Amino acid sequence: MTSTAQRLAEIRGGVPPRRHNARTIAALTGNPGCTRRAVLDSAGVDKTGLAERLGFPARFGQSRFAITRGNAFEAQVKADGGVELLRLVAERLGVPVPERASWTDLGGADDLPDRHERSRAALTGAGADAALFDHPLLSLEVAGQRVHLEPDLVAARLAGRFHVVEIKSFPVIDGQADPAKVSAAAIQSAVYVLALRELLAAEGQDPELVSHDVVLVCPRDFANRPVASLVDVRKQLLVLRRQLDRMARIEDLLADVPADFTVDPVAEPATLVAALSRVEARYAPECLAACELAYFCRHEARGHTTALGRPVREALGGIADVAEVLALAEGERAPDPEQAEAAALLRAAARLRADALAGNPA
Image 1 (cartoon, helix red, strand yellow):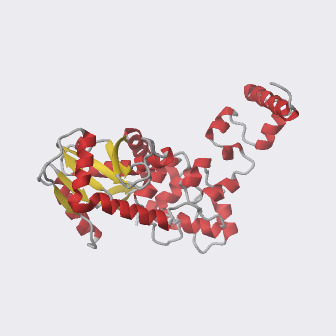
Image 2 (cartoon, rainbow, N blue to C red; image 1 turned 90 degrees about the horizontal axis):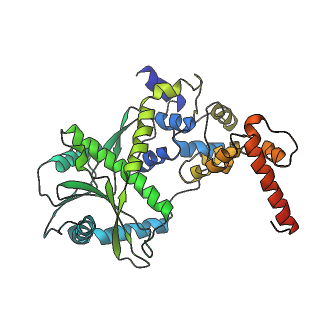
């Protein structure tokens, strides 16, 4: 075991690392400047269990109803060997709908290395130009470890290019879908695009054969009739590559972490709180939808402007404490020179609030 691997094992308390999947890899991009999260994820720490031991369990995830509905919609779209799916994808890409296409299900209970080899052979081998590959097993390197991804998706090869096809159960109503859900689907799809490109590159094939345009298939309006949309994930790919490169340089991250830092599962909650306080976090309200430790970090950030979100923090010009913001707004203390502009805005906002509460016109 290398010194870095040994250090990461010590951080997680000697227990086996938590295996990443596409959702956890996609979530890495949500707050790339957070050292705490990058270190814990690089070490493979079970953040769900850690949050529970701290007394701040994560509160996000799909309901059983949503999972059941999603499985039913996916089965409908993939029925009859993917005939309807093939039509949707071809029409959305603007290419002729093939009269027939091969359908290869790469799922199953095989050992992961065997299944990955079967996926590699199918995706990179010569075959029909019109082909659909269901449940391909892909992989990515995360913090020096090869991670297998078991996507519940279809890779479509049409007109000489691959397109990742994501089937989601959230609706598209009057041509619009929930922006947050589309954004989450885009970054997760980018994980698959990157993994598929790396697979082709490893075989000496052009990775650009994998398109950055992902096909998103969702129910239309309030029925279960599927509709396909194109989502450009180039921006998400850049963010993903940058964060994976950062985690690959784990030695640089560890240089800023105390040598005895650990979140050993047997440690007392107070010990864990003290340990985590020594590693910089960058909490933002968006973390609540993506990071298992978000509720702990929000509690930790109470009284600091970071808890109000990035736009507010930036508008305040680096003023860290809420108490200091209120003092500047009420004119209870003079601002430092670098705080003058923010203080003027705060005093103006305070006057507007006072006028509003008094019923005076602006």
